[in-house]
Length: 580
Ligand SMILES: *Cc1c(COP(=O)(O)O)cnc(C)c1O
Image: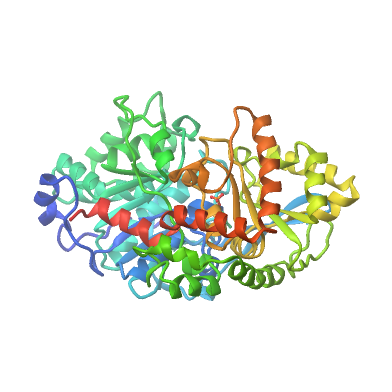
C-alpha cells in the first residue's frame, strides 16, 4: 500500500472532446489514423514467439498477424497485451503428456522498460511495469509484473483471471497515456479486454464529459471482435469480485453505477457489457457472424459484421512459395490478390508443386529434428512418403479423434499409400476429457505395429510446428463439428503452402463453396467419417496424378487466396471503421 493517489494520470486536455460532435453525428469514425492516434488492439493473448510471447491458439495467432500486417501496410498500430513472465509447455512421458513451466524475460526479446503504472486490487496498490517494443508503424505495449502468472492460468471466472483482465484494461489504458497515445479506435479482441473500454469511459466521465456523452463517445470508438459462438458458455464474474478488482479503479460514480446495474442476480458475463460499450461488432468469418448467438441486455439478437480472419502470408508461407506468388502476379507487394490472380494461378503446375514441396519437406524434417514422437523417435520423411496431418488445439469440437474411429479402415488407407499421419495439438491444462481421448488413442495405436510406426503424436504444438507441418505435409485434415469453428486459420496456412485440404464446411472454410476443396459432409458422424476416409484416398490418388493435383490446387487457391490474405482482412477492418 502507498499513500500517493493511485491510478491518477490526469489528461492535459480532455483528449476526445473536440471530436465528440463529429462522432455523435456520424455512424462511423472519420478521424484518420496517425502515429499519436493509432489503431489500438487489445488482447489477453498474442502468439508471437519471435517477440517472446507464446499464446494458446488461433486468437493469439490472429493478434500477432494483425500487428504484422498493419506494419507491412504502414498503418499506425499499437497492440496492448500482457507479457506473461511464465509460459506453459508440454512434453511426453511415455504415452502421457506432462505440463512444464518456463520463465520468460521481456528483456531478452527487445522490449524496453518505460515506467510503471498502478492499479488497485483488493485494497492493495499493484504496480505494473510498462514495457514496449517498437517497429516501424506499429508497437507492442505490454504490462507485466513478476507475479502476473501464465496465459489462461486458473479458471476463467477466477480472481486471478479478473486480475489479469483488469490489469490489461486499466493498466494498459494508463500505459497509453504515459506514452502520449490517444486511441483512434479500440479493438477488443474478445471480451476479456472489456476493461480497456471501461477505463476509457471512466476517464471521459470523470474529466468533465457528461456521462451519457461519454458512453456515446466510447461506443463509437470501440470495436468488439467476437470469436465465440455461444454466450451461454461464457464464464461469469460475481459482484463481489468487481467490488474487489474493478470498482477501486473507477473514478466516476456514474460509471460505477452504470456497470453495477448490469449484474443479473449478482452475476455478469463480460459479453453483455462488451456489447453495450461497443457499437462496432465483428465476427471472424461469414458463417460465424451469422450464427453467433448473442443477445444484448434488452434481449435483442446482436448483429456482427463478418470480417473473416486472414493470415500474415510473409510469416506463414514458405519464402519460395511467396516468391512464386509474387513473380506470377498472384498477390501484390502487400500480399493482396491481384485482379488477374485467378488466371495467373495456371502457372501452378504439378511439377512446380512437387518442386516447392520438396523444399517444404526439408523444412519439416528440420522442424522435427528435435521433436520426437510419442515413441521417442525422431522422424525423418523422404520425398516419396505421403503425410497427412492434423494440427490444432485438442478441444472437443475439433474432433482430433474422429479419423481414429475406425482403426482398421485408417490402417488400410495408410498402409496402401505408405502414408504417415502426424497429430499435433496442445491439450489445455486440466482438460481431462481431451487428455483421456488422446491417451486412449495412443494406447490403441501402440497395440498395432504398423500404426505405432505410422501415426505420430508430437507434443508441445506451437508456431514452428504449425509452420513446418504446413510446409512439409501433403494433406491437412480439419474436421470441426459444423457450426462450432469460428474461423480457424491453420487450414489457410495449409492451402497457401500447397497442401490439399480435407475439411468439414465450417468457419472461414465456409466463406467459399464446398466444392473448392475435399469437403467432408454428412448427415451423421458416421457419414462424415466414411466421407473423410474416401477423401483421404482421393488425396493420395491426386498426389499421384498431375492433372488432378494441378486442378485441385488451383481450385483451392482461386477460392481461398482472397480469404487467406491478411491485407484483405486489414482492408476490411479499415473499411468498416473508417468508411470513405
Ligand atoms: C495457426 C495456429 C493456430 C490456429 O489454429 P486453428 O485451430 O486453425 O484456429 C493455433 N495454434 C498455433 C500454434 C498456430 O500456429
